[in-house]
Image 1 (cartoon, one colour):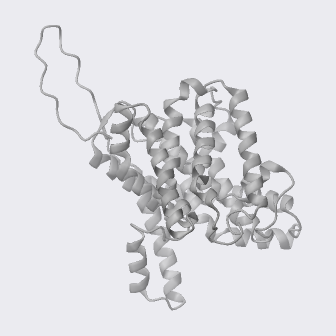
Image 2: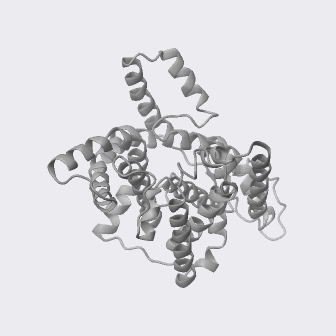
Image 3: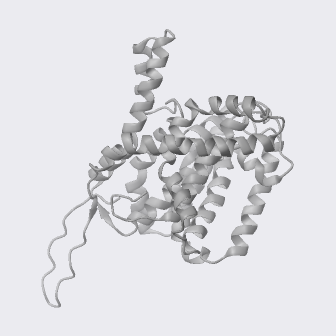
Length: 372
């Protein structure tokens, strides 16, 4: 999707589509396949544990904002206004629909509204809306992160190390860190930062096919072992008491940061019909992400009844792909009817740099702006 700056990166929309499919597969596959099942084909664990698609989304977000804002001045208020227009209308629609359903089954409207208000701080918004809370917290930190990254090329990496240390201290204090690592900015900050770092090192990643593919193979194997050990829910219990959650989101962010930077910079992405179709899915990915939980159970019932019952993960995966494709028209309607009208209200938040003064001319006092 084209940003309010007028820039469009088709390769990043490809990655958005993949992230949305991973999350969809996570929910769809496990309607019939137990969470304790581990596929024999190693890369399938990335779909069997498709919650990692959220990590890909967050790493991509860090990469994209680093790419859009690197070395630029912005009006931070306008930036937040644009993000509000991008995220809140559809989130409000989803929250309202769920609220109506909750009211129909006897949930107090006051109680539900209080829960939604708490969702600004706590990761409790429904249908994946919790991740929007985490992203909002990242936006609050973004000006400081960009400022520090300009002061030192090592600043972001140092913050990642500090975040790991913080999680280690919390783990030692309370005996588990999975909930904070997975559901809050305390764990997810690594992924935003490693996405930004991925943009910073893009020159070194460009064209390094063997390095990145080897890294992806190792990451897939790592995720397969994680899946085999019980995955997100059974490692051995939920929440897990194992210390690997101290660095788990870091590993995801590192792998995805490298892959995003490599894919964005190593190829001239085709504009053929297939490429544009995948990119369109990426454009609708936010709608698919927030709305898919309203539809995927219906898809599975229809597929199982009229095509073939789900007897293994490979059938479930094929059905998840088919169900995901059926979400594309729904995503299109949501994007056109709910998202697009508000996107037209976005304003330009980049502040043009003043021209260089002529030799010998006095330098005007700089206008003070909030960096982001």
